Image 1: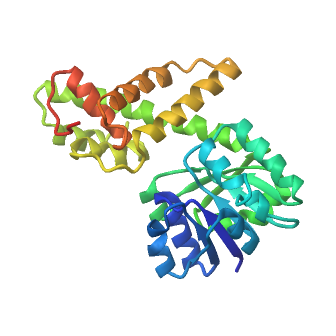
Image 2 (image 1 turned 90 degrees about the vertical axis):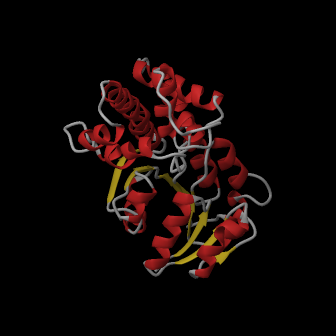
Length: 297
């Protein structure tokens, strides 16, 4: 069993730590708000007072934070991960940031004699808890092979897709489809509802039809919930959509459905719903359609 570190103990990161503890690993964790980590401390996780202390105590340190700014906050500076990591150690970053940010961080890690892979995931907290999470990995092949058993303790599908940063491109390509699929689903539900079909029946039929991807199956019923519990809130979803549009611009790939779906996330923020799950796109479209929902500002 490995001595592991984990920085960023939010919903996804915290549940990953719980799985790693269940597999018998020793985990030292850090979170900006210690109280949010108490349930993991109760399960046996050791708590460190800084990212530097986590990396110093661990052979392999994971990070899973919200964006590039948060990643810099836990890796740079006198108390950052880079001050605690050293020769022969590994960093696994599971955050969703741009490929450029990831590659730059990998270079800094290697300057310390360590190595880094980027390992973003596809799935929700439910997918994670059910043991069905998919992990995409970018980095040196030998590091991937060394770290793969740890990643398999988190999710059953672990795929090496290329060099550092490439897994982030893959993750962005996957995540843009979450909002795009949800947008189409919302359009269909509202067409059915305004045709006289109850929302509940429309959702039931669609989530058992040919269009029912795994994402639609677990997030489609959110259009019946008021308010919408935030598995993945509007701000987080929009961050990924903006990453997709920027990547599309750099690679000369038009992403029109991404751009349109992103505007509905902007509208949700304008309505004060940025902390709700991005399924609140339904309520934005419903209001435009003259349909009342229970979500209030």
